[in-house]
Image (tube, rainbow, N blue to C red):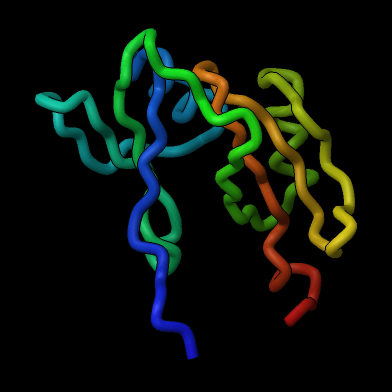
Length: 125
C-alpha cells in the first residue's frame, strides 16, 4: 500500500503566453485555472492523476537536462500524428526497454515531456 499520491506538478517556463499557446494549440490541453499575480495556469488532465500547471520563471530559467514529466495518452500513434511535426522531438514513439510505448518532446522552454500510451488501452494490467 502506497502512502503517496501525486497531487500537482508545476513546470517552470520562460514565457507563460508562449507556453500556453504551445500546450493549448499544439498539445491539446485546456486551461482550467489562472492566477495572474504569479503568472501561473493549471492545465486539464485526468482528475484521478493529480494536476498539471505552468508558472512563468522568466529568461533566467534553465530546465533540468534529463528531467521528464510523463503523461498518459489513450492512443499514442493517433496523438503523435497530430503533434509530431509541430514539436521538437527528443525521441519518437517507440517501445522502451521496460515495455512502455513512449515519445519524448521538448516544450518551448526546454522542458521534456513524455507521452506514454496508457497500458489499459493495450490490455496490460
